[in-house]
Amino acid sequence: MEIAELNVAALRKMLDRREISAVELTNYYLDRIAQLDPDFRAFITVSREQALRMASAADQKLATGEGATALTGIPVAVKDNICTNGIRTTCASRLLADFTPIFDATVVAKLKQVGAVLLGKTNLDEFAMGSSTKESAYGLTPNPWDRRHVSGGSSSGSAVAVATGMVPLALGSDTGGSIRQPAAFCGVWGLKPTYGRVSRYGLVPYAPSLDQIGPIGRSTEDIFLLDRCIAGYDPLDPTSLPEQAAAAGIVTGSLRGLKVGLPRELFGDSLAMGVKERVMAVARELAAAGCILTELSLPSLQYALPTYYLLAYAEASSSMARYDGVRHGKRACSGSDVTGMMTATRQELGTEVKRRILLGTYFLGKDCYDDYYVRAQQVRTWMKADFAAAFTECDLLLSPTTATPAFTIDEEALDERALALTECYTVAANLTGIPALTFPCGFLNHLPVGAQLMAPAGAEQRLFQVASHWEAATKRQTRCAQGDQKGAFYEL
Image (spheres, rainbow, N blue to C red):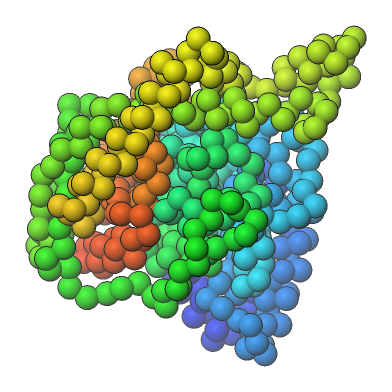
């Protein structure tokens, strides 16, 4: 099997047995990026020299055995809205094209501490606002299974880099599904952790009460290892949860008696029949393993999408106020006064970002605040209570990750309803702060289909246990997408 198709555990064995050095492994992935990325634009910045220095340091750790960890020498890519010391962080925007942070985000500092190798920064929708990268200043990242289709967003570059074998692991951020949706569209694994479990320090904010950094990988164990590395209390993040004991490994053993809920609202008419069949195949496999399937209702879900849009856009309006050419962002030279300069500066923003800022500002206006923003917060509180009640009846929830496989680039441009359908299955986890994991469960018309598991806050281990069982029982193995025009694919 080619190196690009190996998971982290297999790469770890190769490194530990000295079958390959960290420098050789890093060069392999750098060469693969040079070969494939011109077709995909998954990377905005490739930090070749720094990556090789980090790989050399990893080899020294492995030679002495001092400070070596499960991720020492393993290449990782980072979404380009996460700050990296000495490597530019653009958020895929012209406004930040020349911004080079002088500090590392906490998650990046943790990766460096364990000896991981940072290959570069991945493409995204501008300021993480979107589901296709069509507004990225660095070009659209197409789906590696069929380049006529989108790869999702906003963490599209991270998902495509993993799916094509340009990197074994990547970090993304998830505000309303921005890890899980592209992971599902590209046929890889992705996790949105419990809110506050992973530090947001150094993450450029979109909607701070919803944003969360998380891992994308080629297997359950891959995302477990990366999640274990980046999770933990951080005093630099005021929303960070208290330290919890790190798990040594994924919990194994029988699933007998585990109650799995199937929310009626997430298996409705908007769901493509082929997607439903593949997710129900997951349910049948879990039932065969001894899980108890139970159908339930979450009435608040019918309001999840408008609630998400209201709150996310309102927070985006506040978060983006700093980009005025004075405090942050490249300053426009035109404009006869301060107002003119700020106006000219903000013209550099893409259409989607402007739209969300304008709508968010409207929702926060004094004539709309009570009717829109306050009511959305009330619905969010109801949703949290609704999910808490559901988790008294079941241990976790199973649903599709998206209503359909990846839609075509033209469909995304013409049909905003298609965009909404990609988010309505994922936003609830962000609104309620619970963890959610997506994993590939088959193909429909040669495009990957994702299944989603959700659990109570702090119960990531439950998600890893079930996804790992599914992966082992069905002998799943993620192969690299080939990226030809028709989409090279394989049957799961």
